[in-house]
Length: 351
Image 1 (spheres, rainbow, N blue to C red):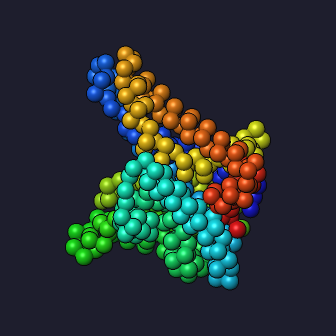
Image 2: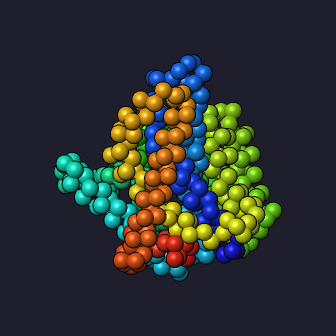
Image 3: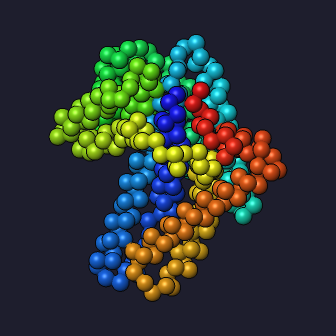
């Protein structure tokens, strides 16, 4: 893989992980706003956190599809799946277990069937909620990638399949047909359908990477956006969604090489930031909210300060745990991050 593209994936993965932390820090309570402008500005910032999260998950799904389908064929399918057991499934299970242990220690109680359902059933959020996508992309690699390989057997079939799948996904999400609606409304299935186009776009770029160089590679993204624009008059939000979902691959391909941004150790903390931040937020955000509520300044400033504080603490916790495990047991660090460590900052799902 091109060194610049590999570097861009690391850089943007870190950035969008920070986006996700900001979103999961929650919407700030604007009830103590000093005036109407303060309230509306804080609400706008809350809305921006949602936009950042939508782009962030679109990025993760797209890049995961890209890395899986880079060099993928039916002969190396099982080898790729084996690597994703180590880079996706095992870290996912470990972090669910760690959160379960933490919750039990502070007095929360769960029934075993509930834990199993939340971990594997996709009906409810897992205990470490943000890691739901890690489990989903593992299932997509295991179950969907052989189908996509067939659909993407050539560029022509890939284009046709993409447009057909986009229409099918929108139909499934918006249909009033009762049996279909019941299936789509099950658990996280609707959310999976939301980000499936991003996964397919990334898969296309991975599948045809060697044959698709700039600027030719951007034609596919432009076609998807144009297709969404033509249908956007009938399907609300379709055009905007497709613009966001094509953006990750566009950024990865066109973002220039900046030596000062490359090979930074902090990129190796990306997975730990993502895995650690939510358990921390769940247990401590209430105390932070109470502490800030007494400060007599506009809630817009408090909103930004609280989110930046939670992000900073999340990064520091990830860095601290990483440095500790680097000294005590690098192997454990590699296992719980799926191989994504400061020593080996390359994405372990790339092969």
